[in-house]
Length: 280
Image (cartoon, rainbow, N blue to C red; front, side, top):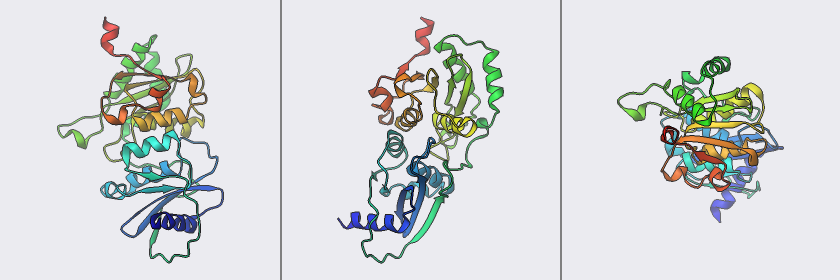
């Protein structure tokens, strides 16, 4: 009960009209982020908080995010999935209330309230190719089938450098989003060696927003070299104009708990297409 009242009082202290709030406390510091209610982006106060913490506190973020996160918003599949993958626990729907407490705390805004997406500095260079370059690269190969697109996604993933100490490098994972005519709308490569939120699909979706300010349109198909985890599946579902029309194909089945029973699995919106199936 005391922890609940403390969270309500902190939320009251940080309340900003027309905005949802997310915060976490560690060693006397409250790290927080606001997000405008009704804002349209593959983001939220929770997403901004997590992405900003990883980006700004690379070596310390692990310790900060072992603490409970609080948010005044109701959790979406996107927020729930991101917490499952990169943090520990969260309490939703915290009501800002003055509990008459005197708290000796420092407050640090992780991302300013006017930014819908957290700016990230650890996005690897492979994610900075112009979209036109990827479109031309795809057209030259004339993909026709889902296996063709997955094969091209695998080729794109090979651009991610690897080394002997694998955990010091980004995993070679890539994703492509194409419209009903086979035109590339966005792409993303994994960039999570420092910022654990920057999976290929997250990079794809946030790039789609930055460049086109649009959701995944009806009739589009997302191809990923690996099965989307709970974080990526949640953001894909959240940022789809019509989730029931989603088509997500992936080439490598992930066996870990963070890729099981995702929102895409629950609604049968994704399909595993192993390359050996094509060969047979």
